Image (cartoon, rainbow, N blue to C red; front, side, top):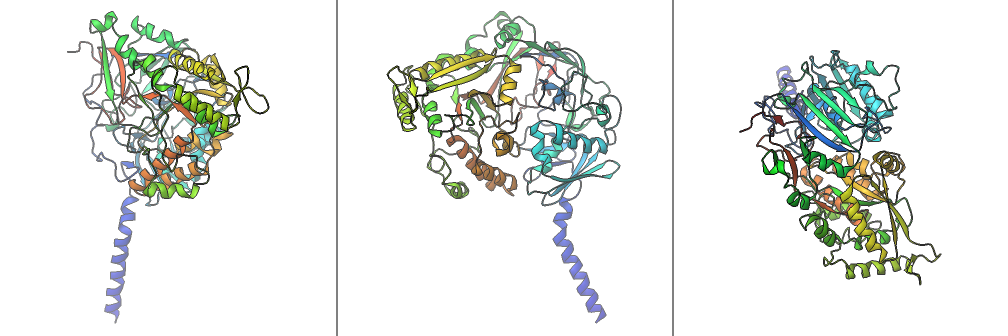
Length: 607
């Protein structure tokens, strides 16, 4: 009897062990983590696939920027801080491999551990991790960084902070974060939070802009600067992480310098004059016709085209739906009809550009343009009563015949406006039933000459409808102030999309951002369908469910008619000095975050 009981007990333990084994394995410390499945690189990887571990160190790269800066604190709403500080001076716990949709590998953190549900995540810091002043990166620094960014930092950090149930030190170098929502992306999102030195902020107000020299754990130190004119970053010879596999072949320049110019139109001329060494060209027509200056002809300047496989994102003129008459989707629809993309493309770009057709266009994440079917339709049908025409039936942007008059679309726009209660009076002015004229203001940043040219052609087209569109050109500081306060009718808008969209979608078009100053929801969209699609994306366990949710979100946003999209390119255009080199192998994201200057190098006598 006892022998039978012992046998039965042993079998129960064996079976229990088999059941628990997958969870135990998943909860083991790992070198990396992927949004779906396993990270592509093994634990003994040598370097990121798009970096060259043999790349020489030394030299400099100089980049030109339009605008200026008045702060060196990039973590808050106040002030204009250079983006480069975030990536050169500071580091997160995990680093992103831009050759995968969304996978992270240990940086400040040696390992990451989570459960099957991803209800918590635990990081173990590297013992050698240190800030540039020599002080170690501690668990206390990690906890403080999450708290201060979540409570006093930019709104982009508050969404994730609001989903954290607890954050605690569980060992000398271990921090555990527990979540109170079902959001499988959070384990990765928190791994990308920058870690700041707590001691250096004692006695200082975190949410005030400052010109104090920043101190982080990253590969570069801010060496010198002049407000609004230039910044010079020097590679830290004592950088703690220089020998990590994640960093091999990266951070090759001794100096990374940014020169600032007040007017965007001057930047290209300064590049031609040799004042900096690399320049991204956004205008396809200009790329073909304006690069015949002596340095290009001699071969001192090289034109490189870097392909990518990321979504188009959304780029164009955004409507602020907090304001009348833009709250009426029919008005927005009419304004989109009046935008003569084909004529503008031919006039300004030589017809070389492809139009953005949806927010995730040019990728497997993008919507189809016919009627919704399958899982996509199932996700959208509960919201059918609130969805705008086209979300379920299919939606296509209007096309013109390419002529300046755009007669057909202008005629359709006039009809749509009439249905919305707007008609042209005897004086040729579009008014509503109360006699209020239809007037809009579009704000543009000073120096954006191409954007101004597009807007000017558009304003002339609107005149034919009796609409007065005022173009207000302001400096970058005023532009940021007004967009942070949503003080505009229309503005130039640009949102890049990754191959693994997630929590940032709440920041772009979540309801909380409608009334939060500084949020990225410039359009002011507040939609239960949008919120539901994002929530479904974040809870998805497999790629098929994730794809269906993103495609459904794409339909809601595109048919919402919040933006007049312009164009995108499936490759980047970079003109640069011949001494500047990059690896032959290109990441799936192409010329994106983590490419230039991260894996480029300087070669004095290139072959």
